[in-house]
Image (cartoon, rainbow, N blue to C red; front, side, top):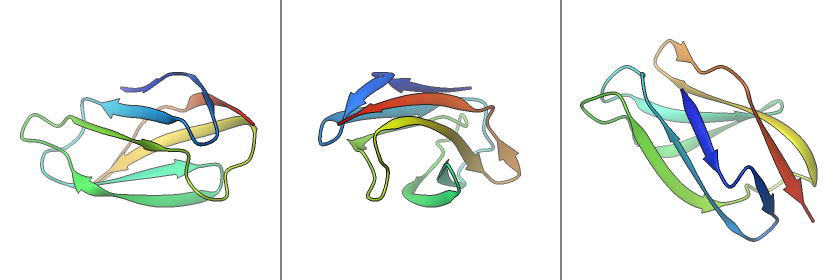
Length: 84
């Protein structure tokens, strides 16, 4: 399961992406639209992760479908609203 807070974010404002139920101690990547981004972190010993940051380069205002990948597990899609 993946959650994004807030679900509506303005470009340049921070957001937090977190998840549970992933394999342990594996690299975490974010798929946003057709792009994949290495988040530069690994899942914890219990298969969770949390990262805070800003909207990634190249993402434009509108609805973006995101998924998180760790090992062979891909999260269900989450819709993120990006405002200018």
